[in-house]
Image (tube, rainbow, N blue to C red):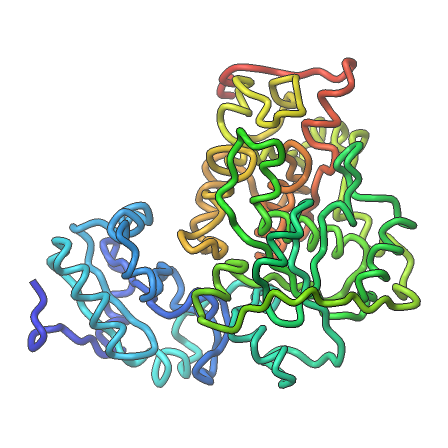
Length: 433
């Protein structure tokens, strides 16, 4: 048991000596955004100690904290080393581990001054961490100051939702406009709208190719029994909108990591003002500027047959094996033959396996471990799909943030595929090859 006067504090030399110990678990208790790469204390190098697990100190307040710890594979038999920005937070988490039965717990307090400044010590970060911003970053922006990694002079903050303006009008970030996902995707197919329609929609929302766009949504506990469950899954909708904007040609698309929940957790001002959209004259580039980010049915069929490509089914297990369609408007059940199971979570409106408990994006090594297990690898062209594009877009966004070179969304997904009786489909548990 750790006592106040007996906490074992490691030097940098001691941690380096332990680093390759197979039983070692290094725990980073800084905010998720610092773990990803944002330098919140002016550290020389952004990111985290290579291999460290992300376990922010704020999660200590969650009643299921120990379940989160165990889900990350951090077990009582491991050697645990806790590090972060402040001694208070580091010791707080270390003591929690001790109370939970972890007998070998140490703290490391020289991360910023020693580890970050020594180029020979291993660190890593999320390649496109700049596109995943914190509530503090957004607040700095709307106050008229220049946050880190921002050099633009025009931005739009979009509160995304699906046919649910009440989600916006009952509270949003000051200055944010609302954007219905229907502005960018057509309800007849749930695919992205035509280039001409996208141009008009983006211009109406004040967005050009050179605008920095920050998107977020509200998680409102979707219920499959509702007529429109997606109306409560706003943050997946925000990432769907972000994906289509990237395809269209917006050069600087950013997501508020954790969505509206992160803004609330930070304690910043919330407003109910209905902010007027400021239309612009011209988007500025031909749409789509990034056509490779979306594939349609013909290309998806080529990918299924190709050795250097895969399509990835980002649906729940019951959907994948054909027990349910996942949607109240899709009748046919099953999966596309040859699709790899990408495992979103419990149903069509949740992405638990790609998110942390506070709805921030899950650490890279955990997502990669899920994908490694089913041979989803960055050397292939990958097209992620779900029922209609939302979950596929979030999985795509994870891979894109990692810098994987050839990632797309199969826009039609199961909805378009299953509507054509000529397309083959499978049910049941697939045979292992």
